[in-house]
Image 1 (cartoon, rainbow, N blue to C red):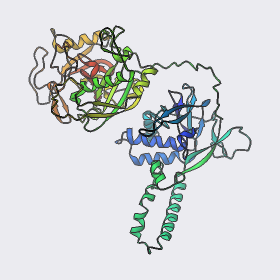
Image 2 (image 1 turned 180 degrees about the vertical axis):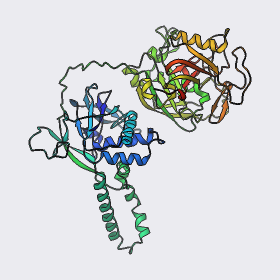
Image 3 (image 1 turned 90 degrees about the vertical axis):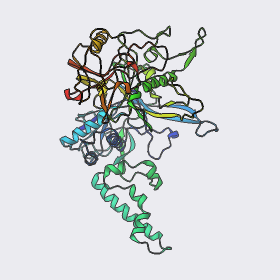
Image 4 (image 1 turned 90 degrees about the horizontal axis):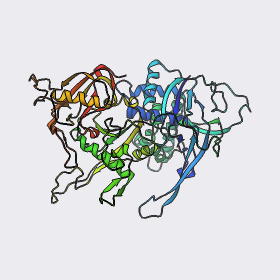
Length: 567
């Protein structure tokens, strides 16, 4: 049968059942079938490739999965919670809130399978596509890694209590398990019949309510029912995706596209039966954190180094600052992988550049920064991941944060952008979404490359070779300048001419159009102009690839060229 293998890296699952307040500390366990389908629907609308998978294809996939309630293989789990005080309104006393969740070993996956789902090859591809992009299930704290596989279901331990997962009646008393009521979607045919009946009943009820005003016209009746009809779309996938607030507004006591199914499932323990210290994690720490950046107007890619510095500053603020008594200066409490400084508070001189890179990205090619990639070769431990997860915004005050001269008499509005963590992982986990994290033979500049030292014989190509050798990366077989299509001007001595540049949203942008300086003053910068290059390797090279001056903040950034293909 078709199944999803769900791994929760944090070992937690947060979800509140329908109709229950979060402060009741109730947990929807096992994960409700309708919640899983809603997660796939949301993932499709936010992350799927719409040129390959249409909304109609999604509706067909949901219809196929909703034919019968799924079965589960649940890991051994316990009920846990945290409690904390939060001010719900300004100038009010904080309220005690409970955050309940299911706790289990992160190395033990949760499996959910649909016994009677018959997926066509294109639907299987669609499900694979969505599973690879699924980042959480339940609340946003429930990080998840999902994959599709074929499962025989023999080791399932949670099934609808009146059947064995294949639609056959179960003899009473075969399972000594608790009964958990879960919301599962109706089958497409059942939903169609229920929808017609509900609409007919509601029309009759509303007609009866119009007796004092006279007989309503068809147009007036339909206008009166528009909010009700909005909660009952024709397709099951659309009905499952209706927001809970919309259902509450029409006073639904439960989702109309769902039914309650009793599941026989293992009882949640109150005490962890395993080792108190848990199991040793064998997975390496993730080396990449990718954020979505939103706001209007979004920053231009020409200001990449500004956003890179601002991202680092916002992360340092999460760790706090300590005043150095000797110098009177503030010192970041962040580890060296984030601060880029050693125990003596001096910048690291690490040829391998193992501390974090803060790389702004224009993923859709419109000339505006829409993502920020944070990566470090040594990986991010749990503490650092917790701080990165708390980043929700970047902002520039009226006085400016980039060292620009500001006229005090001219008001300067505050600029702010929202951040949302897309997920942690390795570069290959983001390869389909980000060219910065691709894998290719050919890499091309997306921001100007500036030499880290004075140019010597051989010019920029020789500087690229020197930096790659210092990083212990592969030696390139070809290095070219990126020039406009109309340029036939020869390049002498490896220096760029006025026709060298890249095309951004239909416009030629040269190195001089980019901001090419760090905000801190007095830093030695032997190459103030820069250039754009295309580097080709004999073997496939995995990103990110950033070289030269300011490479930790978005300068000297290269992207994989897709014509060579990524793996």
